[in-house]
Length: 496
Image: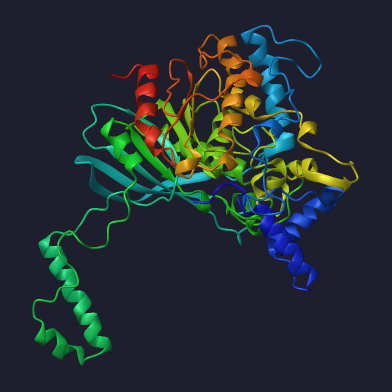
């Protein structure tokens, strides 16, 4: 899994070199330049490199990480009025923040976004960790009558315990939508498959009959070995063991993870194949929209506890999980894994990944077109930096309040690179806590002074409140935090 924006600046420089040499720009580069023209941007600053030996290597010196030490105040309205009550937050401040994030960062969902019709494509009775489950492949077909040339079918895999005594809580996970533990053929079915495969081979090459006669015990298919079992996700095993359900949602089936795909997928379908305007949604918002459409369907399934459906993701999917929960208040909980810039990492921290890594040609498609202007060096609006962004990551996280939010990171030594800025993300989580306490819930219990916040040692579980933090000792995954997440979530929703 790639780290968000890890190679962005290198790709951008390579693209500039190839273009200068006369090679035609790629579709993503053409789209990126088109958005720059819409915004009147003449020059973008290149993002820092994740390679510590590069001339433009990212900063990892904490002393240089906070050039913009004052962040937007979470509890101050744009007109300067303080937010003094939960009612004021819900009625005025939250809608104000939503508008800013939609317009400037992640983009707006079109009013006429396509409708989705769900169906069960296939079903499989499986065993995960020794427990029986019912797994179903789901297809969500998007109405494409307005642009028949663009077909979009969302793919998801629903897995629920087969012996549950009632509706179960469920976690939507951004991940490949495949059967987690495909059932295997018994001896009779395996023999039939083996016989059919040998017959097909003989049709292609009759001389193989001599080899089969020489080796009468040769079997291409044996009981329990066909097809090869895919790598098992331990997180799914942990969730099923705790009595939760899982829905694996394939983001690629919603929207491609590249700028070349912006005229396809749900974004292209909603625009009928036309280019985006600056305020329209990027891939992160589209993936979050897909999770909301899956939630629409899951609330109608009797096996699912509709009041306790969460969303999860790691890296770029961690960004998407946070975006999904921030904008859709129906999600009861969110597990945000190693999200970095565009997720829980503050834009105003110049440590590791930066704003310019998301405005370059490699990652701009995640964001609204308007976000490009914050990486502009020259243009119609002048030079703009992260300091000009009217909101920051702590305010995005605060949009989840008072619901359950668990922020997860690993450690650089195990592969969760410093590029993601674990310290800055902890600072943002500290700052966001004011929303939970205002709404009568508990935050991390470490105060809200982000400037003085120091990340606690790994494995320190701050899980007393509805806002939680834990940095595990593993790498770029949230798997080592899954048991802690479930212990926390079960307690908060009243499960034994």
